[in-house]
Length: 481
Image (tube, rainbow, N blue to C red; front, side, top):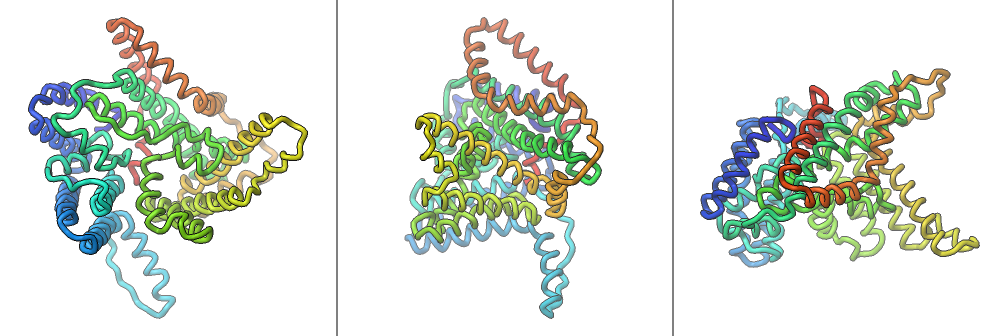
């Protein structure tokens, strides 16, 4: 059961009603939401619910221990807690990668290895809830927040079902305060939340799913069988797919949470309109990029220890981001790609050597220069990000090179690409520019409609979206992480 099924809508409608009915009894209300969240996760795979519960209680206890100790002891407990959390994540996510690596390299050094082969299934959402736990321990140790005394509240922070499977990665200080005294007593920004849910469904059901099933999956699987034109279109389409897929989930998670009275952090802010990599990472998967910055980049020294250390820290932090997505080499390279690109961007920016500074001698107004800089910055950023997504999506590093190499292979035959595929891709590009104004306009329209008419329109929209979706909707991409 997930956001795109009739079963989920029935489940959520019942939860929504009980959520607001139980507000008058805050403890019962919080316990209800916790049990509902556990039930939601249990439906995915009951075997992994125990891991979620144990990890939550473990970190809850560590938080209390950290708060009751002096700074040096706090630091020791924090380090132990981080190691324990990373070990859990590493076992499920990276054991096979570690085993294969050891079996490849140790014999070359004269050592034998006989690590057991384990058929490990990755628990859905584990990367997200492990990161929530680590950020909580760090914030308590650094004195940013007090340790949570209620095991129910802490467990709900970790397991809250709208954001459990794929984020956003909430911070304890932001979420736990919303549980006190029964939380919000009214739904704020009601129409905004409805818009987010509809927007998320449209991105996932209509745009992302169509492009995955009709273009990107086939081309990325066997790029050798396709023309340069088809490969180019597939790269462009996947750049749209991953945004529509992941931001669609985030939109729905924020919208469903909002209807329950919770405010989750924004996770995307028109990232493909960014004019630099720095700007892109302020707009893309904001909860993860800010997590990487606050808990990896800054603790490493950030930009406080000179240019070399700043660039090293940046590359290291972004490579860790790639490793977080997966243990395969192409994920790690994707993170490294962005790290190196960001470091070079900082280097040129620091020395005022950006390519567009040559326009200073041109006989144009400063306004035109600024617009040209933005256009150049946007185009360069978009191309850089799109190339990076090839390594992210390809089944292997070699597969990514095959995709990129296929762009330049000579071909006398132009592959026939369905017109509808081209139109949806172009329409998706246009939607990047129209998303914000369209959402704002739809919010205003909802607020002006009589309730009965509003309800009819919303029902029609939901029915239309499901009718436009394929029979088999591809799973959300970030469920794999």
